[in-house]
Length: 146
Image (cartoon, rainbow, N blue to C red; front, side, top):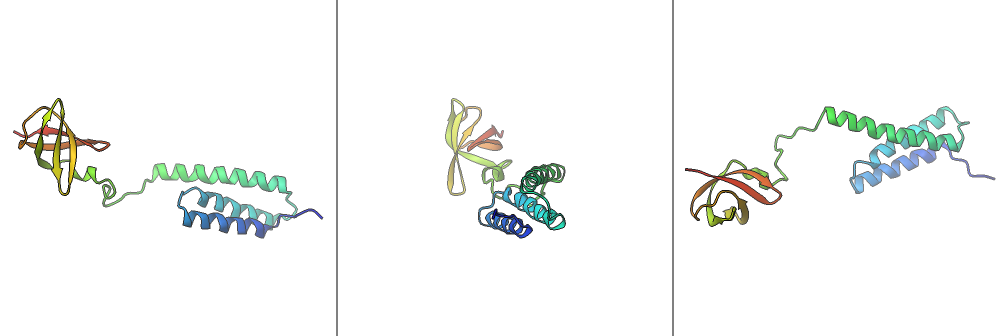
């Protein structure tokens, strides 16, 4: 007797996918879980649906759910009251600091809180005040304050 896929198989698969999303957040398994749930719902409504059509429906719903989420997210990005919370270097942009090492050949160092950071900017002596104007990976761009 051949194995028959029933609607509750799809719902169990949906729960497994959502559980994977909870345990290892990738924001991808969630949409596949939704597609699996909807495929199970379609099978509940149309029990004569063959396994080939079920897989095709699952594939189409998976792609459709991901594309719809992507479209929604691009039009409605998540807004945070602290956008630089996990971007430590970006929190320092605009701050005025004193050079702890001279800028020579465009490269120097500053001390911020408990860390030393590399800086790029016009050559000047240690002890000069500079304003942080940008961040390129882990190197600040600075300008001299007169």
